[in-house]
Image (cartoon, rainbow, N blue to C red; front, side, top):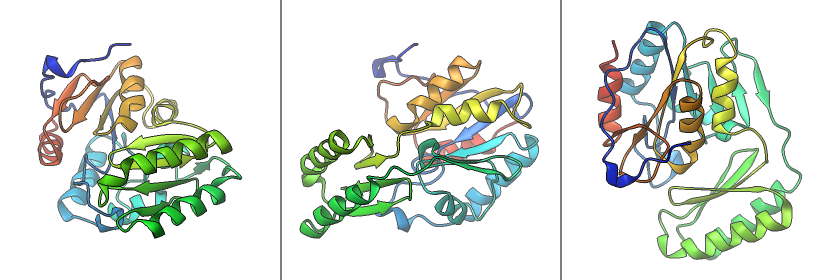
Length: 249
């Protein structure tokens, strides 16, 4: 498995081929700028129209693979994409509309209570309940990063929940499928079968998706600042990612 070093200066990918490719898109930091509060991200005509046009042009071989809850993804994309993997792979809606979901871990309530207690003690900390996971965001209180990370690690060790860190957030999730598992599952079903996967994402939580795409004959595209990654290409940010998607041919 190749890890591309940030010093290599990954190039931007060539235009996305509409024929023969399957496209897997993260949401926050990829299709939409990261907001201070998750609920501040809303629908955008350019974004919604783009994913709808791309999906039609690619014969439905477009899926959104995000850490957000399924209802939140549908809210932001205005229901414009049917194949969706939510909560980092724990919920997956197939192209035929069938929803598959992991059974929630019994200790989620305990983790939620502890995160809410921390948020009450420290203004700026935000709790996001996704049903199968609970996240504590510290973007508005970066000085509390150490406290949040320590609490998440302690709870993970005590409960068996999986700790998953992202950009200014610590999340405790039900153990189960990853974003990479979602990519593999989609590629085993119509209309994705036989296509070369292209995974586009920004966060460390997208590395499983990059690895799965590369292993299955495709590639990953990192969006944002250079870092060590399993992606083969990089785009500067959300605007560049949208421009690149609009140039698909």
